[in-house]
Image (cartoon, rainbow, N blue to C red; front, side, top):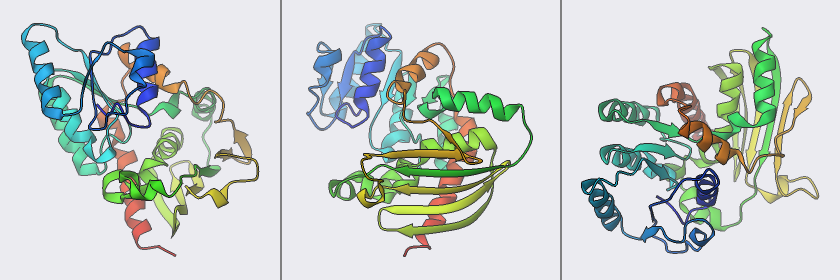
Length: 290
């Protein structure tokens, strides 16, 4: 679901490169020529009702489909996850799995009732540099100083799309920053305090304390925040030492799919602290606009 979306090609590539089949795709927009690169024979629907009817028919005739992959706008993810569970499929869902902590609890309940599983795509955990850093941190017991700068510029269209609507995307903190905050919690533990936060047009920065790190962070979609000659910035400094994030970034979805299809799923229950952190930062950001 969401075959015309920005992130869908990475999912299509992962399914294709791992030797699996895409039975059907759905999006209300029909700009899905990318399907020809991977699965030209798959069924395509622009209406949810016809998509649902096709899947129900496949179930009736014994052609059960194993997974539903969700690449739809953020605010629809939990509803589409529940749909997949009701149809008897395991689910692979783009980030964020939900926008609020209480919606996560409802989804966990639906997952438990169905007997199926939901796998959230949080691919930065599988980046080689992050994997190496995780092993290093596990061997030490101390407090780190972390500086995170993530600049991913977007044009005027961004604010006019669903991504510019905080109620639908979760704003910059969730839509842009979720992978980085997920990795920070994964590496350094849960949030202990929000020290400061400042919100500007298309840019947010702040300081938080995790169990074993103090983190100064900046997230921006502004072109003026880019260094000369750069098209984006993913900068992570641990005690002043740079962690390489740019290389091997594009193939991480394939690694995620490979792990998921082999039974390695990041469980929904483990996402509570991440979603609480994002929710807390969004609420504080609303009261700190400059």
